[in-house]
Length: 503
Image (cartoon, helix red, strand yellow):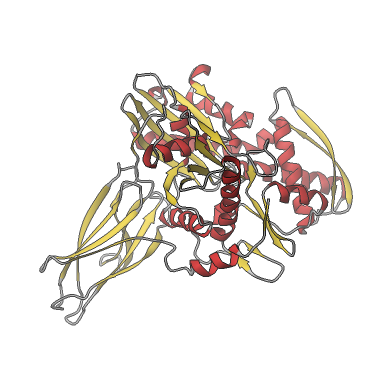
């Protein structure tokens, strides 16, 4: 069985294409009516708890140490997101692997089949380190990862089921628990073509929850003339309340909620108006508008060129989010669609997995083109500035595969190798992030000003490739970048495989 996985910030899902060629979600082993797995993990004396079991336990033990939002730290060198009762630390990849392993067990129990391959979704704006960290998490979960697919592309693939035989410009607005992607695509009878994508790693439902948490904290100060506690139990209670309040305020016709909350040992009567929440959310909505406009600008388009807006991701259900998109796009109501906002990405991942690696026929449009989501280049010495600077070779939003060449020269007579540092940058306003150092050699006849041609590129799957060629001998060396190769994955895999997984 081949599957598609939406590894989300707050919830994760796994899907497959059934015998009829339609995507289907796999339910939890212990609850056939539950398809969403909360992306939350606890590791303690009771073993490893994943998903809804952790949420249920938090009702009884609000101070239970847990890990949420591991996805937001993926690809950060040396990041630690959880420490268990024995003092053992866990990376974002390890925590994500436990969530993936739970999904794997669910799918195999639901279908009675073994997973032979899976495609995992990532935000479109994830850089190479974040993508490689996601692949590493899949390997740690002992999943045969066939590749990655970008979340808005997966959603567009699902929405493209039964598409009309006409050419359309689609704008996918994908707002999840912690990330936003805005992607422009062309849907044609031949398939889907990604034109441009922009995004933010710090914009999603988590931010809306924290706005409500701030409102509650202020009401606590007014009512009790004291600061609410910052201990784990208080923070868990506060976040749980905020998430529930956000969902209630998103219900049609609900303008205000009034609830009691036990916080820091004191009862608090909380009243939140939707208008109050939406006013606080306005800066985040404006940030989302900037991302959308940047995506259109990168595609060389305006809203008038868009035929249809697709809203996906659980946070797109917040009313002011949809209203903001409608206001800035000025499209008729029928041309702003939302279907299966929680499941569309997982459905699309399964369709693309089957399309590229499976044997079952589907009605989904084939994916014909994706684009680069970061600039790619080298760190070089600028003689005018007298310092090392980022020298971009490949721009953002270029169709892949794509490559570019740069000739570099040795600095010394005895220099037998050439080292280069490869960097990515989200945009011209962001600082470049290193992907690592690459050393090429030995040079057959070391000499000063010896020419070595460096080739950087993105392959068909969007992975970074680095190659070097000796311009005098024609000898080449090539290496595909792997961000997780320096980590001791076997050691981590051995550690997490011994955990008693309960979900």
